[in-house]
Length: 128
Image (tube, rainbow, N blue to C red; front, side, top):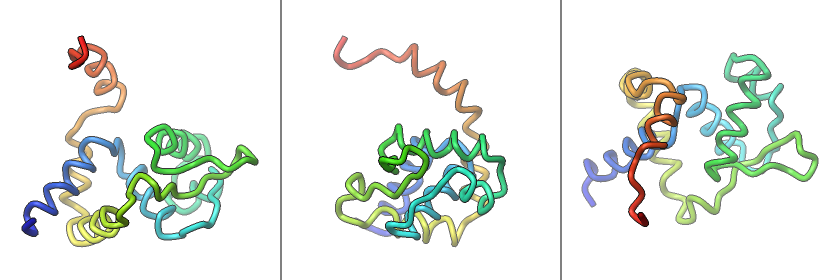
């Protein structure tokens, strides 16, 4: 794979899975902290959003399989099994660090999550 192919994979991942810049920043923070549990309040303070929005972000990341919810029900940790080879997250972090403005623009250009979710409802499934 060339560097361009690697960057394309990162950009595709972000475009397909990340709804907002706070989602990306939350995923990066949680990944970088390893096994440290994160509550909505702790995350909110770090990414400068309200606790309700932070809880939504954590739930979205859990639904996608990027974080797992602890047995206490109120904290979350990075779920490394989705990046089994441990290669994608370092590349995402590096790409975001090197091109923060470009990545932020790409995320903002996608439209709202609710509009994308509505559009997904009309996509024809391969099974049908």
